Structures are given as C-alpha cells and as structure tokens.
Amino acid sequence: MEFSIKNTQPEKQRAACVVIGVFESRQLSASGQELDSASQGYLSKIMATGDMNGRVGSTLLLHHVPQLGNERVLLVGLGKADAFDSKAFLTSINAALSGLNSTGATSAALYLLDEVVAGRDIAWKIEQTVLAAYAQRFQPGKLKSKKDDAKESGKVLKKLILNVAPAYTKIATAALAQARAIAAGVELAKDLGNLPGNICTPTYLAEQAQSLAKEFPLKCEVLERKDMEKLGMGSLLAVAQGSRQPPKLIILRHNGGKKGAKPVVLVGKGITFDSGGISLKPGAEMDEMKYDMCGAASVLGTLRAAAELKLPLNIIGIIPASENLPDGMAVKPGDIVTSMSGQTIEILNTDAEGRLVLCDALTYAERFDPEVVIDIATLTGACVIALGHHASGLFSDNDELVSEIEQAGVAAHDRVWRMPLWDDYQPQLDSNFADIANIGGRAGGSITAACFLSRFTKKYNWAHLDIAGTAWKSGKDKGGTGRPVPLLTHFLSKRAAS
Image 1 (cartoon, helix red, strand yellow):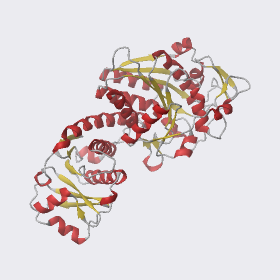
Image 2 (image 1 turned 120 degrees about the vertical axis):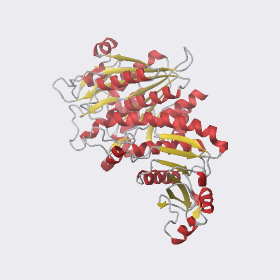
Image 3 (image 1 turned 90 degrees about the vertical axis):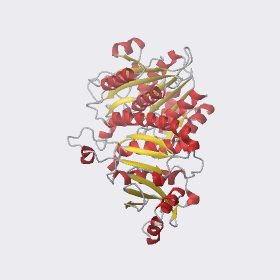
Image 4 (image 1 turned 135 degrees about the vertical axis):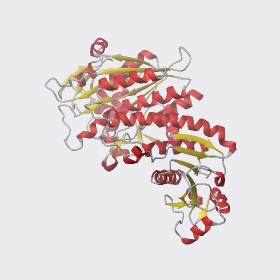
C-alpha cells in the first residue's frame, strides 16, 4: 500500500473517498465542519436524520456529496469528545479502514489524525494507523489455492493519504518511515509464524535469515549440529535429537553502530514445531504449536526493521532452532544433559524444551560482550493464565532495563507487565541428581521458567519476554500477531537515539 503525508483541506481533496470524524451527539469534527460548509450543510442534514450519532467505531458511507470532488465521504464515529483516548482512536481507525476496504475505493484521504488523543502525539497516531492498515490488508491464507476475489480484481485500497497540520509534516514523515519498517517486520513475523511445521523447519528459518542478509546490509552465520557439538551445547542438542530435521543456530548481525561498540543481543526461541516430545501434549490444538518459533520470527522481523531504518546501533539476533518430537532417540524424562555453560540439567519434562534451547543460546551470547541481552519466547502456558493475551510477561532484575522496555511497550502500544524474579522461587528448580531441574512444578510456572534462564545470564544485563499469550491468536481469527516486533523496534530506536 502507498502512504503519503499531506496538508490538503478536506473540501479540496481529490481522493476517491474522504474520511471524516463525528463525535457523539452528532458533533462534526473540525474537518467535518469544513466539508459541511463546502457542501452547503449537507452533512448537517445527514446528522439531523439520526443515521450517524457518533458512537465510537460506527460508520456511514455517503455518495456524491454536493459540491465535493470525490465520490465518497466516510463518516466515522469517534465517541465522546472528552473521552477520545488511545482505545477510542484505535477503534475508530480500524473501523475507518474496515469501511474503506469494503467500499471498493482504491484511494482515500484520512482526516482523523488532528483529533487530540490524551498522552499521544502525531507520531504515535501515524504509526498506529499504518500498522492497522497493514494488519487489515494482511492475508494469512497464502497457501490457499484460490486467492481473494477483491484482490484479484484490483478493487482494494491502494493509496492512503494521511492529512496532518502543516507544522507536523516533518514529524509525520519520519513517523511514517518508522511505521512502515515496523509493519514490514510484523508481516514477516506473521508469515513465518503462520507457516506449517512441514515448511517452516529450522533449515527454512536459517534460509530466511540468509535471504534477509542478501536483501539488507546484514551478516548471517548458521551453525550446524557438528558446530554445536564442538561448543558443548548439550542442552539444545538434547531437544533436537528426537527430530529428523537438523537443528540450526542462526546468528544475524546489524552492524550499524560504532566499531567495537557493545551490541544489543536478541535471542529468539525457534522451536518450529513442539509436540511436547516424550511428555506429549494433548492432541487438541496441537496444530498451534507451529507458533512456538514466534520468538525467532520476532527477532528476524525486528532485525529487518532495524536494517530498513539503518539504526546506528550494533544488534545481534541469535536463534536456536529445532523441532521437539517423540522419536526413539528423543530425550526422556529423567535424562541429565550438560549445557554449554557446564551446568547439568535434569529434564523432568520434555515439554519444557524452550528453556533448554535458550540456555545454550544465552551462554553463546557471552562471546559478544553484549550491552544487553533480551530473550523472546513463547515459553509458558502459565504466563497466558497470569496475563491473558494483552500483555507479554517481562522478567528482569535490572530496574533500569525494565523501565526502558516498559516505556517502549507503551510507545509502541505493544505492552508488557513486569513479573517477579525473586530468589525465593529458585529452590523449586532444585534437583537431587543435577545442578538444576528444567521445571519447578505448576506453582509460578512462568516465574520458575524465567528463574531457570537467569542462571545462564550472570555475565550481562538481561531481560526475558514471555510472549506465549501475545504471539498468536486462537479461534476464528487464528494467526500470528507479529508481536513483539513493535516493542523491540521502539526499544532499539530509543537506544540508537540516545
């Protein structure tokens, strides 16, 4: 889709459709009042009929409004003027885009960005509008044999004009560039997450990283099983030994910062299909375990965004990729393996495999002398129970880093919630036979998982994001969400600017 920033008055706009806001009690927005004046009160007459009351998210499409040069005017309800907050803005934007996509108009001019949203600036409004536009045009069924009829006929929204006050043009233009980079990263993460496990294997993930390195100035290295054996990655390899698909350790670098500057390292869990291994999962909804590589997908999406934005920062993505399947060679409950760190791990449950591949990747990250390491993983169902699907779980002992990530989440509208990481939980991981057990029981499951990872991160600043509840949607709208690409990109952008 083509986007542009304009300062054109609504009555002079020549797009196929003009989008105007209406507050409750049938109160036209400022741009709506300009159109009403130009159309000699036509919109006021429509308001008087009661067809549009301004309820948030409601829409009314008008054709051939007198004295205007465009075919359509779309009225969008904004709700109460004194309660027009972030939620109301997002609801109205999504309603407007949905309405536009059903009209057959190929171009539209949006006049909703001048409305004041408490605590949000024009850059946020631009970004959320672009992300919403990308989300609505996204097609998860790319493997279907029959394509969408509307897309085949070309009757889709192709051009969106974002109208802002002249004073905001420069800020809006910069925000548009960032939004498009984030949106492309989100789409990449969604596409990878939605692919089935027979296509998106560890090898396929490695190939996607290599393709990114050809498209952008990124450097990619892929370690094979023999390389991991030499490094002593017994924990990661234990997970992989039940699969015929070879594991991969993918390293993708964005060298945008000063030479020698410490990098930010992102570690993404890349379990391309998780059956649970010998500790087999229930069959119902097991198909959704193709999403267990969404941490890896978000790292690739974020590196893509960073490269497109040319962030002046050194960033390294590390992806431990494997399948987790029940084979005659698969690791068994009670087995003890030695991690790259030298710590021995008693595997009490083979379905707690994410932490087993991550711990070796986190140890591997030490060699880069990182400024900070953030791992991203669909790690625990317990986090979904604790936080639902709105916030990702955030774990770290570094208050400054926590604050930084929280602020990035608010700025991106990709929010997190800090969970405890107290030493009180560590004894739950005690083992009679090894240095550590890979599970700590049902109580505080997401916390003990983070505690497990913390034992491999003592040499650098570290945070863990549990995205099990936010990386994908189930049910009718099943599919990847692309989170937390927006959060991570904002985190990196803020670091690059400081």
